[in-house]
Image (tube, rainbow, N blue to C red; front, side):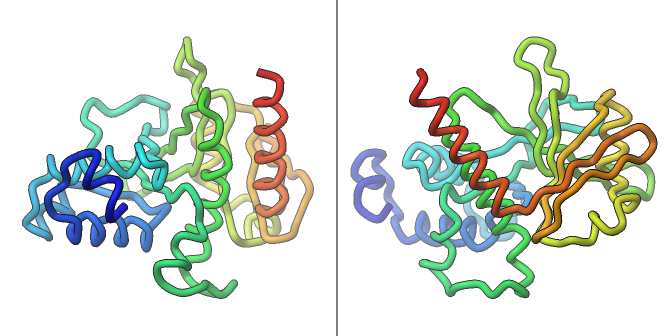
Length: 225
């Protein structure tokens, strides 16, 4: 990042690029608004867009774009999530996380998204919307390439809470109902099983196992290509 990217892309301010990447790494898995970052830093938004392109081309980060609760894309991509392609990069830049740290949830999400990023043929999305006083979000959605309708959805959790109280997964149920999905997957710390509510089946699986399965299946599929 400090040598190859500047020489390949003619980046003038290496320290600014380094600071930008460090910020993205620290907040990996959270929603980003370049408008807000540009306003707070005083740096032109178009320059940050170029930095994102460079970092993505170097496979240091991956961008995930947003849809609403009806699986519709936004005309202007003002918000998206940025994920490290390897969650250990955050610990390398800062310090290792403990299981009880607040950032562990987004790092678990980063670990799972990083496995999916190895599938060149797959484009993940995330859903986020506001309906009155209710703000909903679903972590990962797969859209059919032709119809652009949801195939499946996943809620990534570093908690057993929703296994024990599935009815609290309000955003997930709302998204499934609006898009005629009869099932969804939710990750946990160490709980596994299924729960059915209102005609929608939630399948629960530990996050570590799920990340491993996605990685193994990706390698198997690539070998067959």
